[in-house]
Amino acid sequence: MTPAYQEAETYFAELWHKGQQRWLAGDVTAAAMRDGATIPVDYCLSTVAFVNQQNDAARIAVEEVRRGLMAVAPQQFYYLPESTHITLLGCTQRHPTPDVFTVDRIAAVRRVVATVLQDQAPVEMQLKGVGVLGNQVFIPVYPLDRRWALLRERLDQALQSTGEQPLSHANKAPIHMNIMRVTAAAPSQLQAILDAVAAMQQQRWSKFTVSAVDYVLTDFVISPVHTQHQAQFILAGGE
Image 1 (tube, rainbow, N blue to C red):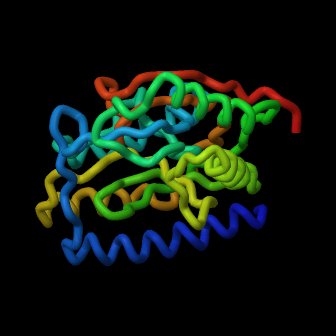
Image 2 (cartoon, one colour; image 1 turned 180 degrees about the horizontal axis):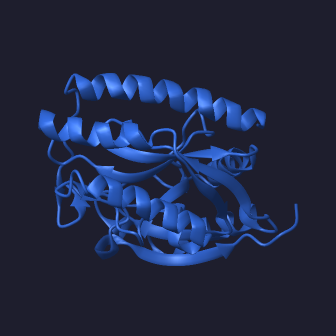
């Protein structure tokens, strides 16, 4: 395995250990949701890779995980298939209304994204296992190299140079694909979900080839009613 993959293994193993202990202790705060969106709703400009826009094997694998979780906890919130994604970068801070995102600002951020992604080749990753973090259940995404982290870093720096304040993280390597949010945190529910997650925790699902990145004005969970698609960038360059 590559060094990037091995580092991800260590990171996700530690995250699973900590998350499992918190769930067993009932230390999970249920998410506040209504009509498929968070309460309150807030917005940002973001760059994401939707699963449904990438390779079919990844889409099929994600649906298998979703079905496994829904079989034991159907009343929780599930990201819609068309909303399931990994994030490249939240390009702006979050705001309680989309009105702050003017046509000029949306266009300016789009130009930065286009420049950073120009001539980039598809990024190869691996879907493996299932994990928990806070009230989220996610599929760990293992990088085969450091290109996704480097793209995050370049886009972050490029946006900051224009005066934007992207949603930066000190560690840009971890990649989470959120599948479910706990909205009912009764101990019996947490245990049922945790058992299902544990059963899938070491499952190697499929390769995940990111060849398209979408630029959206959206809310925290990319709910269709609060999402405005702005552009799509195809990664078709050479290595």
